[in-house]
Image 1: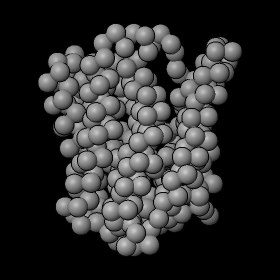
Image 2: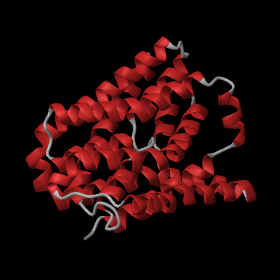
Image 3: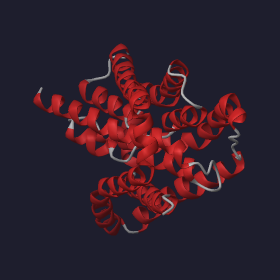
Image 4: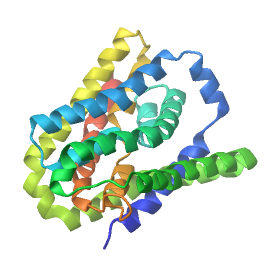
Length: 281
């Protein structure tokens, strides 16, 4: 079974659900205080890819995993971050806004960073990136579903709310199905590299959380904003990374998605622990 036919519908549903949750009032409220937005976007769009690049070099990852690690670091925030922010007592409106903004901004940043990364380490291993195909796929699978969700929310608010309740409950189970299928198909490669690659991915998450917490403290975000920034920077859209890596129109390399799978597993473990700590305090 080609996992691309599983990940594409899941990614489309997640982005459609994101569009359903967007409210103009959330943006207006949060933009009155832009500091937490700026800190989170710098952490997610600049710091995280730089950390991934540094760790990939430090661990001397093979080109396919090198590119895969940078790819997951370049992706926008995951849709589950809104749920995690709510559980952690964070600013949910800020979380929704950051997920939406990063999803739009990465339409530009992902092709640029991945083209550079592929030219850096991929060409020697025969890995190439058709940038036009990547842009087209992102517009079709990322931007269009969000716009459709916004349109439904505007035209039929009550219906959009009902659909959102259903999709929100399905999001995490669907991701678990995707991860399970991917693991079954690629368990040998995953187990062969889980030592070095697993350590590398875990360090990436911990460094991202630590650096985002430090940045939030320096700009004096309040407690709710700080918790949301930490979750947003640490939680990435693994479904998008898997779609880009395994798509026959882009990299067509399912092994490249292994860092995203491991990242998805570890980010949920680490952030669930973080949520548990915040709820106790």
